[in-house]
Length: 340
Length: 278
Image 1 (cartoon, each protein chain N blue to C red):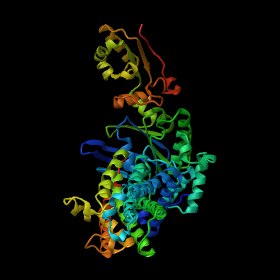
Image 2 (cartoon, chains in turn brown, purple; image 1 turned 120 degrees about the vertical axis):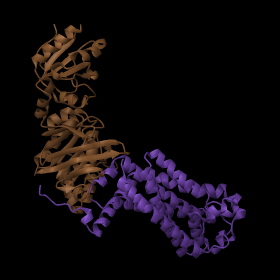
Image 3 (cartoon, rainbow over the protein chains, first blue to last red; image 1 turned 180 degrees about the horizontal axis):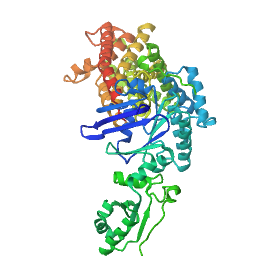
Image 4 (tube, chains in turn blue, purple; image 1 turned 60 degrees about the vertical axis):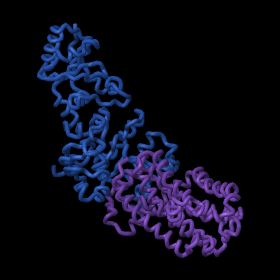
């Protein structure tokens, strides 16, 4: 706890007197590395970023960034952070270089320092020839990289990235991931929010899953997967049988099945592995349901997310973890048994 | 990668605040220069007003003019339009802030260790520079179509200064609108709601004595009328003012209006800025 660079304790933020965007959230983020904040839309991710960047005052609890309390010394926090992503933006009419210099100046750098810093940062994001063109000519991916570069102008100790790759094409997303990886190598602590599991799986050293403004689970990706249990059972049945299947599987292995409507599956944590599978098949048989497909596999982060929040995460290409979720996870997707 | 320590602005000096103000003002002016079509179009509107009102309304209003206008409607009109466009120039502040807010630029500024007053002050200041250019252009067009100041060059310069001071104060009203009204379209409507009734119930186009009796007490004392009277008095002399008003009195009252507007709306705008949620 001693070297936590971001400490959040019992943080509360209420909008319009009733929406509890943050509802007693506590987190401790150690210095260095990437910390991923994962949660469905409306989970409170952006609100947390806005509180940590002093854009919103918290209604309760406390938050410290690099040892500075956001309420007691917001200006001190601002001097130690960089903010990029959906909450911050670059200026379309200025050139890339002018944007970075502007932010550098507002971090308190002298004109000469800001100019030098802009050259360094622009070289790092590989934006040298386009640096003197207006931003409106840049592609979406280049803008995001510039946005990131601008937030680095003040050499922040903590970089807050709010959905940095939302809406980017896969190639631009990979570029940005590489850039974030480089930042961590020079010692910046990155806190990033995302709805994309692949993003935290690839980038984050630790992950917090939040929902309804509360911490649901926290740990490394592997720890989270272990927490869901040894395996996950997926059952596909014809549409008319869904409700009955959910009913029939209730309590198998001491768990509740979740209805993954988007993919026409019913998902059940299977702590006993094959034992759970056998039990599930027996119940289905007794209910006279013939499944179209039954699969037992190790949990993916997607399953973690579903088990913890009751919702599917978004995948970059729209929906569906099978088409967008990436080949990496599919490798773990081995069938151990199927319906006869 | 040596770790430079960044000094937060709150611990910084007055010099830091002025520095941030200069950076923001420069950025806004640079944006204006990068959009030449907007600059040209926004300069065209006052010119159209001058030409249109001079030639279309000139004949009708001629009879109601005080002798100080030397028989020319354009002499009467130009000081009024200068006051009106000082007010309209302030409206730019609302549009500029709305754009920055909706694009996330305000969020970025608010997350930086800069002087918190610099964003609004820089915005109003850069709009003041724009207004000064607009008013100068209007003066040139006016001179070209027959406007002749009846006092002195000093009077003319003083009139410009009073007009700009009035417009600057109004830009803080617009700053508040730009921050609290959510969508860009609604901001435009809100600005029109403030600007047009004030301009058309004032003495900009016609003497307020020609208006219905129930409207006169408001029309004769509202800020745009007072500012217009002040400019007219400075440019045309005492004879251009309604009975019982003096040039010095109207100038003092116009500056008082500006100070009062500033005293009320600047703190409100700053408060709204601190709470901005985009």
